[in-house]
Image (cartoon, rainbow, N blue to C red; front, side, top):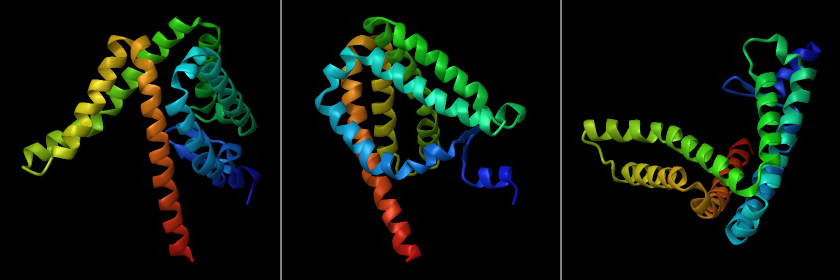
Length: 195
């Protein structure tokens, strides 16, 4: 097996982005420790976090961009039209630098609008599922609730990103904890099945 082949097996493809081996190695730590800790911090310290959002978000984007860029250079992803790693890492770095040097209110506005737009785009799958279930006379109450909540929260972020941001940080904290618990239970089931 060549070096390139062994490296490919240790990476994970998400769309046209290849997740570096170094980030995959930290996956257990991220899901079992970092996400619940961040969730708790987001819930209880949201106002304090938003006070320093430009430095926190900017730093995370810059660090993640550097890791992704190093991986892109190491794996020569720039020579492969099937991955967006090089472009993605540069975009992360540019966004991180812009966010880092914005003042707090501009940063909250920028991140709030980006988050709101992302939420609306992400809700398309739920909306499509809702329309499908309604057309086929299936039970759609849970999907409808999910759609309404997601869209209302996204619209609030777009309407007044600065005021709505702290509430969304708290909701993100709850979501991180839920995802962490559900991911851990799935991983435990996989281990039990393999055992």
